[in-house]
Length: 321
Image (cartoon, rainbow, N blue to C red; front, side):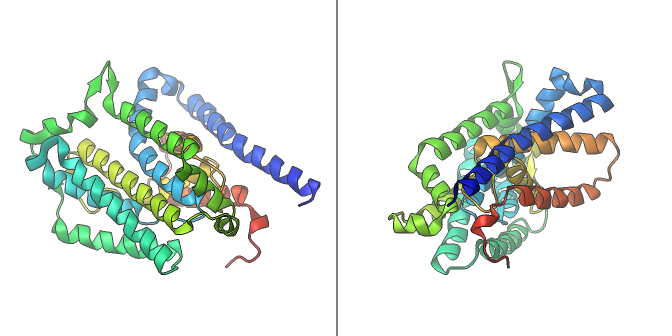
């Protein structure tokens, strides 16, 4: 690789790292101009509380995208998790989330297994898994929302309650972010996932068990998707097969908006957190300026295309299919 090429890559990387922060600052300025009360502490706390479910799902997706792969089943896994949680709260109480999380690990394992064992692209493997879990969710719930009764609502307080005047879900979000960051930055799993995303052939030659770490990344993604479903179920006091609709595109958007390259190898948990803040401020801005709620999905689609165009490493892709 020539010196000029290395300099060009370094410049692009620096640009990718700083661009999300610039975008966030600009959006905050625009929204604050339209609504000066936006930066009040109560509004900021409310915004952070609303962002945790998306953050948790996005953190799981980050690990898969770092591989250069994608998991389209996360919203369906989260929805199924809401059904399991809501259905089991009357019998298991605070521990109803454990079966939901175990289901998420299994769902991630299944997608990863199909992807690695049968050499099926992650896009297709996860698309099939999405259809599977949507169907199972409708059958298990009988296509009817499951509601947590008033007698059992106290079991949701670990998510919906407050400590020290701060919403518990914010503490949960902080813990999830720290956990994902440590896993990414200070464990072999995080290092090998980045190495595989940066160069799978080179990693294989170096003796890295590619399939093992891919499988673990998908299992972590499934775990975090299910955890986001647990949080959603507790916040909404119920569960349904449609409860996580719209989260899939938003979760992918926060990852790529934060600067994690869709081609893999570059990015991480902290960047996803920045991406979450961008999306949440953007949503406030779109609502404030009267953007149609249905058109907001089109905005997310455009954002994903633009973010991928800015972050993708084209030098590693000789043919685009």
